[in-house]
View 1 (cartoon, rainbow, N blue to C red):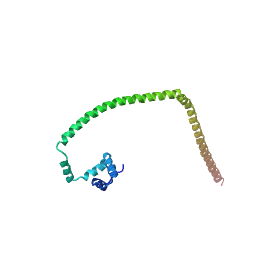
View 2: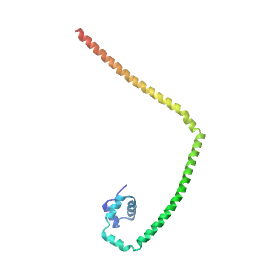
View 3: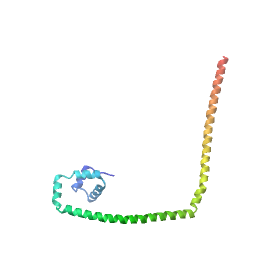
View 4: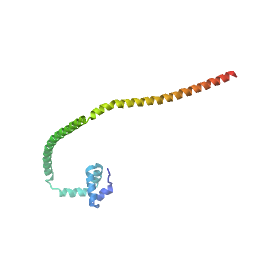
Amino acid sequence: MNHYDYVEWLLYKNKALSDEKMNEMENHLYDCQECMDIFLSLIDEQEEKYAEDMISSSFAPELSKKISEYKIIKLNAGRIKKKSFINYQFGYFAAVASVTIFLTLGGFYTNLVDSVPRITASMQEVQVRHNLIANFSDRIINTTSSLLLSIEDSEKDIIEEE
């Protein structure tokens, strides 16, 4: 998320930006608490007093009444969404069942069952190849060890003859 700094919010507050930039920053305030804190810190006492003078004394009771009406509407909307959710679930299960039937009739599952032994055989073949490589490295180590032991034995024989 791209944040705005103190100077940009000061320009926003003084309406010294283009309309497009003002709209962009306003939309950003809805999502970003950090920028909202910066913007709110720019509000001074004089602006608070001006806002108090603009707001009528009946503002709070009217707002409370509208909020309570909104809650009732929202609760009713939630009940409608539950029914819609149940219909959505039924549609989802019907779609899954139809895809399953389609795949069954198309032989997908039969082909899947037939391919399991082939996969197992290829895995065993890979293990055999791995064993050949491991056996090859073991043979090299054993041969090298034997060679070194024979060299040591021949050196011991030469030393004993002297």
